[in-house]
Image (cartoon, rainbow, N blue to C red; front, top):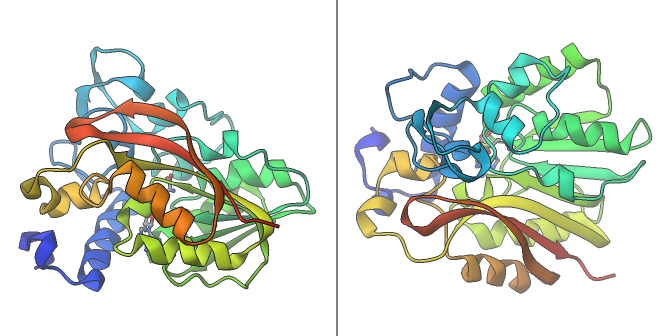
Length: 277
Ligand SMILES: C[S@@+](CC[C@H](N)C(=O)[O-])C[C@H]1O[C@@H](n2cnc3c(N)ncnc32)[C@H](O)[C@@H]1O
């Protein structure tokens, strides 16, 4: 029972199993309103309870019932015409596609693509001559994203089951990488950025939103599985995050924006980087 273990006592594969179980439940909608649910969206909006005092991306400071759909809207997504299956399982903490300057014909890779919302927005931008690849390690998310794409009638999307620490993607084959609240969940973040560097073509770029920390987390918080799967426990210091990206070979690495503060100094950041030509 990994849920009862401390994160610091778990092996990387056990941590990934806990993450997969949590996001399987997000995909299947099998959480209940009164339990603490895994939600990276919540991490960017205050605490990790479902009904909470919202802030930053969630708008007002009133006690509101925060849903994944209204978080997406508050982050600037145009969800008109999107399948319910894509919005109800949205678990992002930013809107990276809005800032990725995607162009017609580009190949885009979404790390931890979930139910596919960012892929669908990106697919409109790259058009029929472009393509959006999504990689996710939770079968229920891949299945849901495929159903959502069928409902939309989109064909320029390619869902791949896999681990972003070992991406099922060819070398030098991608123009832009996006990711929304995922890399904090990876036990080996430097491997993720090494892989990102490998698959991007020279001159390719990264635009991710993710939870990072402005100060170290208390150990007891870092050790809770629910805090880890909720996108706070696995988050690292912002400077450490940028150092992993630079060490992989990227240049022009910067935090271009922030979307809210949360408990323990965790915040949602937009992070950009370039693979040199
Ligand atoms: C917080 S959700 C975000 C989903 C999506 N990006 C969104 O904005 O709705 C995290 C997603 O990343 C996936 N994930 C976490 N760690 C992963 C890994 N190491 N490799 C591939 N997918 C991973 C989970 O399965 C889940 O679908």
